Amino acid sequence: MKSKLLFSLFAIVLSISMFSCKEKSTLEEAEDHTEAIGLTIYFNNKPYFKVINAQIDTTISKDFVVPYQQELTFEVKFITTDGDEVVPTESSKNFSWIIDDTTLVKASLLTGERFKFKMRGEKQGTTLIEFRLNHYDHPDFKTPKVPIVVK
Image (cartoon, rainbow, N blue to C red):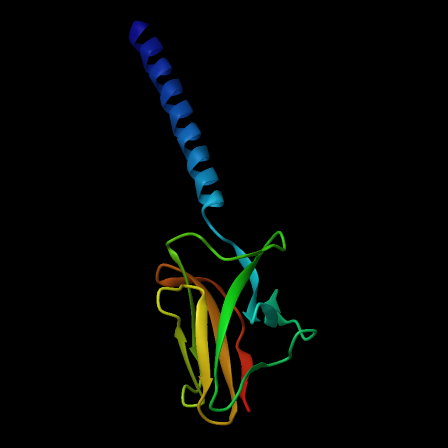
């Protein structure tokens, strides 16, 4: 009888500690994890290009335009599920892209920056680009392939 009571007490304490730890972990992950539904790319502190819910916001621009033989510097902010624009603070987050034809456009992150980048139009034409918010080595968010135009 005494061993059954001790076993039951042990099981209750173990269950409580497991559930309370799990709940804390979930809260910590939610606080530390940027969930994006879109992004806005800024040039000279003004919106330049925006994608939200996998759609281009054509009120800003229907294409991402990079001038021929010119280099522009951009900053990206991600749109959260609440509609806020944020620059992720988690060290595990970074920004990247995939350009279909890299002979048209050269792009690179600014030195020491994770969410500021520069692009230069190398050849006139149109290709596609996919922007990504990565968590370590995998994307947590990516846009559909959108037009990038060099003119």
